[in-house]
Each structure stands twice: as structure tokens, then as C-alpha cells.
Image (tube, rainbow, N blue to C red; front, side, top):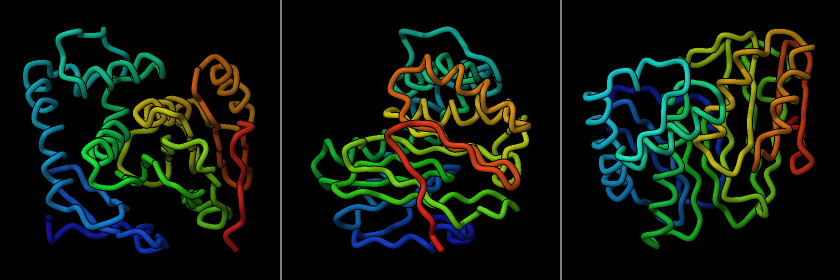
Length: 246
């Protein structure tokens, strides 16, 4: 763990009966909830995921920089294939899905190795959920009056799934829109991450949410969308609902 890296403020607000621990390796900074502390196991998995990804980027630098989808590469490592697919579905570059892709892969490998029977992995605000109980995911949205005051209720029946957010106001990720927060819930966390970026890029005024929904209705396994723009909240998806945190 990088002892000099600050803990994101929202991580201090997480309340759970599960074990909560942080794992950091290079740019990957995860908070994981599991039935027991699995720092060394998770770190090993992160390295296993990142090594082929980093090697692929060295040979294919366009993968790192592209803001548009790239052609599918059948010879690529599995993590790269996942990201290429997500980018194509969302119509963005593959790196738009990197946080979600790594979060889901770490979570699934912890489950597949039977190290825990439930897990949540948060990577830069993008989350893979596979829990036995419903989960509340608080929405942080810059200066919006709704920031930190509302949460998405994710029913256990929807899991495993991904909950990913793009913002033009907070975080380091590139967003071409003006959303305080644009959150996507999808069965695939990499796709949720890519879609959050894609939808967030076009969300500049209230009318733009209709454009997002036109696209959303054509995407399989998309469970819900929440958009926060200044003092307005937009929600789509019959499977999810918002709850007050006040």
C-alpha cells in the first residue's frame, strides 16, 4: 500500500458488517468489503490482472489514448477484451471502462477462489457488488444540493452488478459534459463504467437526459440511470429507486 496516498472521503462513510480493507497497487486503489480481510490475496489478483493489461498497452499505445472504440482483438488478454467490448457498446475508448473492469475482475476472482461468498469492490467510485443483502450506494455530486443526501437502493436480486459514476465536477476522469453526477447500474461493471462516461459526456442540460434514454433503451442488461444536474435529479429504470440519507 502507498502510505502517502490519501483515503477518499467517501470511504470513511461506508457502514457494513463485512470486513473493510484497502488495497493499492500503482494506479489501482481499491476498497473491498468481504467476509474476511484478504489484502494479500486481492493484491496478488490485481497484479495478475494488471500485468497483461500493461504489457498490451506497451505494444498498443492507442489502447491507452483512444477516445473512440477500437476494433476487437481476439488475441488480446481477457481484461483487454472486456474493455474493448465495453468501449464498443458505450461508443467510447476502452480505457473509459478500466476502473469498472478491474473492480469486477477482482471481485469475481475472490468469489471464484471461494475466499468469500460475498464481496463489494470500489475503484475510484466505480463499484462491483455481489452481496447477500440490499445495498445503498450514496451519490456524491459536487456542489449539487443532492450531493451526499440521496442513495441508490440496489436490491440483492440485481447482483452481481456494477454501479459506476461519471462527473464533470469531481474526480480525475475526463468528462465532456456538465453533470454533477451520472450514475449507471448495469449487470457488467466494465460496461457500466464506459456507459457512465459516454452518457456523462452528453449530459449538459436537462433536455439531454432524453437523448440518453433513447440510447439506453437499446442496451441489454442496463438496470438503471441516475443523472444529477445542479438542482435536478433524473432517474430511469424500473429495477432501482432512490432513498434519502437525511
